[in-house]
Length: 258
Image (cartoon, rainbow, N blue to C red; front, side):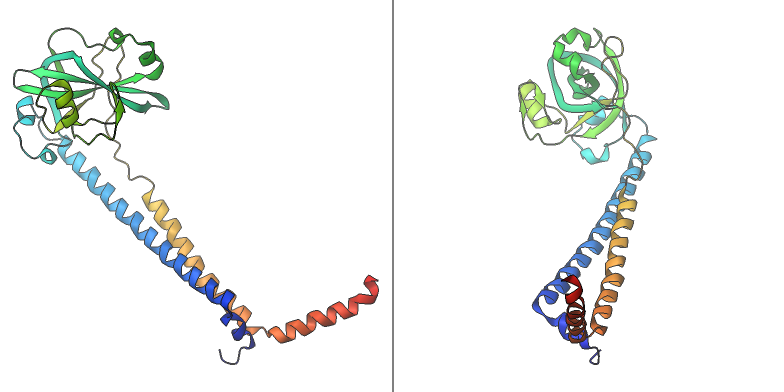
C-alpha cells in the first residue's frame, strides 16, 4: 500500500475521524446483533417455561398463600372458588385488546383458604368511562375462577383506583389484607354478559428478535466489506493527478463557457 498515491489523503484528520466513526458503528452493530440473539434465547426459555408450567395440575388458593417462592408457581394454571369483593377493586390503565383501548378490572377474591387479587379481564374504555360498575360486576355469590398465576410487579404510580400494574404491596395496604406475592389472570370473563373479556394466554411466538439480529449482522457485513473497498479505491487514486485533470478540464472548457 506504500506505493498507492492516495494513502496520504486517507490519513488526513477528516478521514481519520471517518475511520474511527465507522469502526465504532461496526462494533455497535455486531453487539446489537448478539443482543438480539440473547433476547431470542430469553424468549425461547420463557416459552419453554410457560409450556412446561401450563400442563401441571392447577394451583389452589392454599398453594398461593403458603409463602413459597412466587417464581415456582408463575404461569401455573389456577382454579379455586370464592366470592369477589367488589368494594376492593382497582383498574389497570392503558390496556388494549385487538387495538381497542380500555382497562383491566382487578378484584379481590375471598376464599376459604385465603385471598388473592384477580385480573378479571378487559373492559373497553368507552364502557369504563360510562361509569356503571354493574356492567362488569361479577355474579353474586360464590364463583369458580380459572386462570393463570402471574408474579406481581411494582407500581410506578397511578391515579385513584387506576394503577399501572398489579402491586400486591400497594393493594395489601389499600385493601387492608395480606395478599400473596402473586395474582391471577382470569382466562374467562366472569362479569355480566361478555364483559369483562378474559385475559388471553401469553403469546408463545419468538418475536422479531431473529429478524432484527440478521439485519444488524447484514449492516455489519456491509460496513466491514464495503468501507475497505471504498478506501482501496481512493488509495489507488493520485490526488495530485486528479487535481491537474480538474484544472486542465476547467481551462479547456473556459472559452466555450464564455
